[in-house]
Image (cartoon, rainbow, N blue to C red; front, side):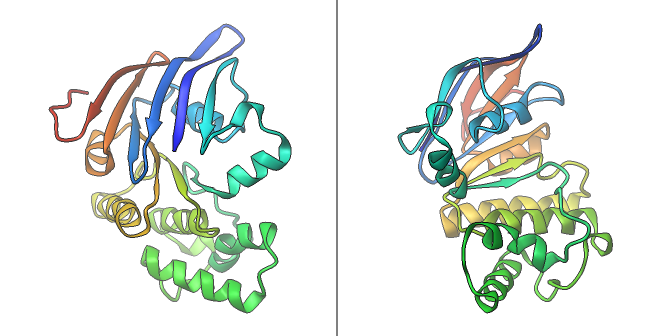
Length: 228
């Protein structure tokens, strides 16, 4: 479970987050909906401890991220897959190397087992046989799929998606949405999706939070009428 409690963050005089609170329950995807510049990415990075907050807390499986030591933070982050906005793949690495990177960095898995894991992931995300391609050979949507694959590498408990469908054509957007839902249904991947796209929010979210002016303006469960 992820508990976000009264987060407050400002940069100089700019207030980005104001008392933001919500809970990610088991087998649940929370959507943070809002236009660009509303603090959605800052919120995600605060949750994993990449950005310190001014006050408030993030509790992940009972551990306060803001108070955790380096070893505890390391263990927490292994349980969280992060899908960066725009994919953020390494151009000099193949698809296999990009997906395998967390495994190589954080485990002592033999190379043959790493390749097996990458091939398994590529089948899950719908890119079998693409392990030897480089990012320059991939479409924007395929890069996004590889980024999701990298987030799956260590079989994390949670996945945080930063604008996973932004800039994609409708067919690829639907493909990404289907994959996010498939991972939740078949692999119990709970987590958080930040987006400015209401259609994506409705398609993947169990709960939608509207972030506006640094605050959660509305908290709605899917199945009830939602007004953005």
